[in-house]
Image (cartoon, rainbow, N blue to C red; front, side, top):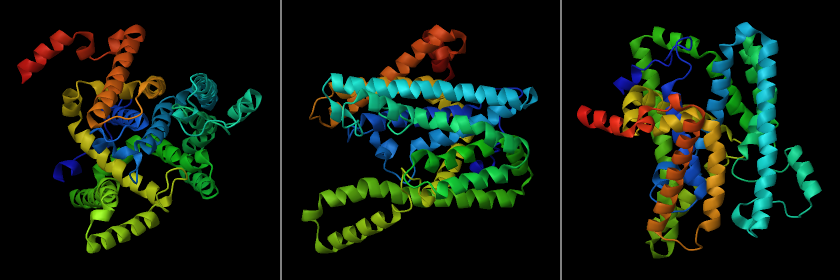
Length: 398
């Protein structure tokens, strides 16, 4: 607890470094989790690290939040170029994401039908009317495939300049109020529901240095209380959520063989789980899910920030590589998931599940290395540039 308290969120000065290692590591981890959960072969051993995407908070929220955070952080550095420049850059980015989203939805729909495998992913258009499919894809009413977040990011990037303008004017509270209003009237609209996470990220990113300075000025005892509160809430809520995914599902599976008292306990737990999920809904971003995300992400960031150099070394810079190339990795993962799902046998066991999922992760890492070698080889960590030299130094250090 003490070493968590010593952390300062005002890490690398953006004027000296364009990247924050802890954020790259976390984003790399989130992308790995997303791949494992999209392969969706359980049990595989790796699902114990991902929660099968069924916890009160998932990696997807972190991906949205960090996208908003980087928008606030990166574009604040470019404010000297004027709002016209920022509007242009954000809209261009939004357009790129939009075109990509339309392409991938059409591509994966066509591919699923071509291979006569429409059940490869839920949500495929029920009637093969390509004109209607294209029309609904353009309007965002229809998305399909494993790169489906792109359309939501595109819409958010079209709106982001207006939110950034409010931040530039010091009107963060107006942005937050508008975001909350949109969330209240979200209905079943995914983008309206999840934009609140993106907006929170923008605000945190924009005020990154200010938040760091505020934290640095806090009295030590106040820091300790805040960190203690965040960690305790995270630990309790995560334990409950984790047990609900793995232990409760086991009890339900063994229901017929349980003693009466344990059956009654399991029944009460099921009722409680159903009740709490009213407030932690994923698609519509339940209020408790938003709150718990704040606690869980804060705890994760403090821990990763404290151990970032060791984590980077122990993971052989893989998480950093994935996190620093997140858009490519996200798109590449969609192709890998589709290809693997076409080839996965109908019935698999635990060992097969593990090796198939691990192979998908290994392929994702490999194609990312190849991508960086082709586009920016000097930006590759030394472990990927000259593996023999790296491991020689690594063994010597050990």
